[in-house]
Length: 438
Image (cartoon, rainbow, N blue to C red; front, side, top):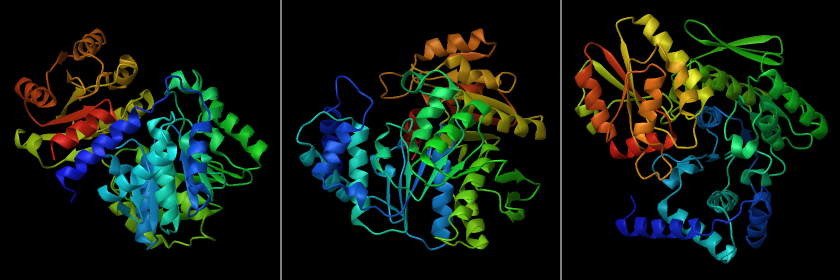
């Protein structure tokens, strides 16, 4: 464990790096490339890279891949975003979260090399990740795109062993464009010359754009429902590829959407079998043991659990766009169908740049009560009063609450019987809850 003094140094360092943020953001990789040149281009000395873009499911797919590869005894680096509680979560070094000491040393090296030049926080921590990944040997680096793909900081990696594009939907329109075609064009920017790519379930507009980009780059595509397929049976998941069928354990992540994410991970494992052969037993073990916080995660201990009656379950999910809401709503609707006496309630908070109605609409006729909260320590959190007003206008029984704890207590006082409470609306809200409940 790190000392309080070390944590203070880390916070001060992060605050300094955040102050380097450019006043005007231009969509290019020039700032990062300048820094990487000063660091002697660590992106050219990485282990084999699997590069993952998409709107939803990137982190879960990487978590499943990482779990499968760990079960196979491989040494894995991983870079994901955002973090929930601590910045360290973004950097997995040979299977373990980066230490505070190593994080400080690496960020300091990047700060010194950057020499005060303007740079975004994501760009400089991406440089830090690439630097530390280049120094320690591993069998694979799982690299998650932060935003988009074409101009994302991770796209300085020029020769991945495999690219993955998970399902694409509308999100971050202010940066990526206001249509699926425009967003898909940005995501498809990770496709590299003659490098293969696994493509998850896509709408026809997005898939057309991806195919056009692949023609430009000569990238072989392995597309869901054309080249491979994944379906759920009563007791397993069925993976079909090249005329053969295999059955695997269901992933230890809740939600029907995790079947698709598991399929993408299995497909990636299949198409890399000549380079990194992995036995089906390791795939099963990885699926059974995978963990990914705040993705339909049941909370089983901590202060929040201590205030709950025995017939109330607490779940949390960091979904933050309409597609995520559609997927989560589909899952909990099925829970309610299987258990008609179950009441489902929501503690909801989101950022001010999110479309509140789009996030809540899929839950109409599923959620009985909504308590709205402000996301702690987020200046651009949507007002809990505004969110409650919007929810009421949609037909929800909704009221604002001062804190998550008070929201949960309000729900308990206003309902009876077997209940499920879902904390939802933002990964930032999920992170604050997990931090406070630890």
